[in-house]
Image (tube, rainbow, N blue to C red; front, side, top):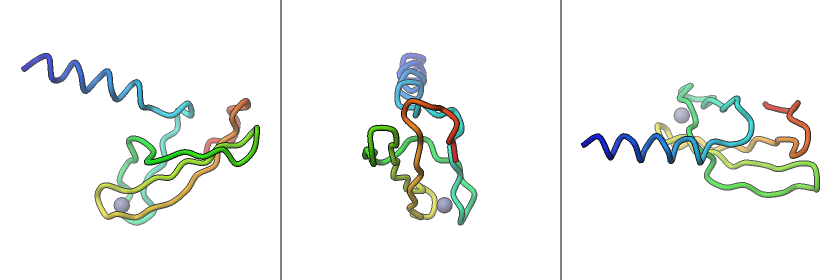
Length: 72
Ligand SMILES: [Zn+2]
């Protein structure tokens, strides 16, 4: 039983985006755990696709790759 919790903890840390601020759903305010997909916009910008597990609302956030200033 304890082995399961250990695996889940490792996965959560591994899948966390480089930006420490995770977005929340604009519809139900549920916390996003991991991005569904990511795509490079340019050499300096990456976009993440998020889908709410609770209500299905989807949205995209943009993040600076080399600078960690843009976190919304
Ligand atoms: Zn939601």
